Image 1: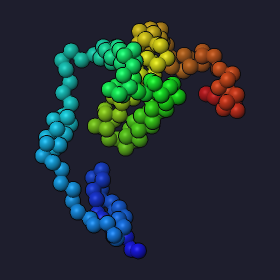
Image 2 (image 1 turned 180 degrees about the horizontal axis):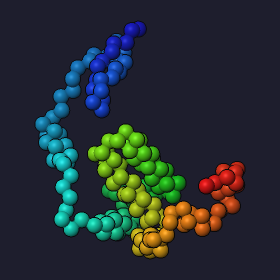
Image 3 (image 1 turned 90 degrees about the vertical axis):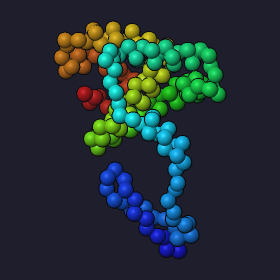
Amino acid sequence: MMAKTVKKKAAGKAGELPVPANIPVKKARIPKAVRRAEAAHLKPLELPEDGDAAVLDRLWATIEARRQAGDTEASHSARLIARGTPKVAQKLGEEAVELVIEAVARNRPAIISESADVLYHLMLLLVDAGITPDEVWAELRRREGISGIAEKASRPRPKALLAIAQTTKLP
């Protein structure tokens, strides 16, 4: 069976996607309500006059409240935490990889969006681990003014990590 080829624009470049011959190719009609909702949701980013990182503290508090409520039917945060630490960590890793991909592609809007996803999943991981943002902020303050090279060199190398990696050559 021969496959038709459909021209499709992806990231500004024309690409070809194979479509089996027995599948009719037609443009999908997106309902007006969906287009309106997407336009409202995806409008240009407006930076608030008083913008600061306090939004992360509020995000952490929201996730913690959802964890305590435990409503896995209504809360994505509660659902992920209920699935356990490995799942929470996996989701953070997935989002980090997506951010890296967009950074390499130099896709500014996607970098902003994926960064928000990474921060959300980082806050989720902190809630799951019982760590408050204040503890992280204190660690960042402790590191202020210290060379990144000197700070990294001062860290103890965890033996468990070296055993897992089967190397002593970690930077």
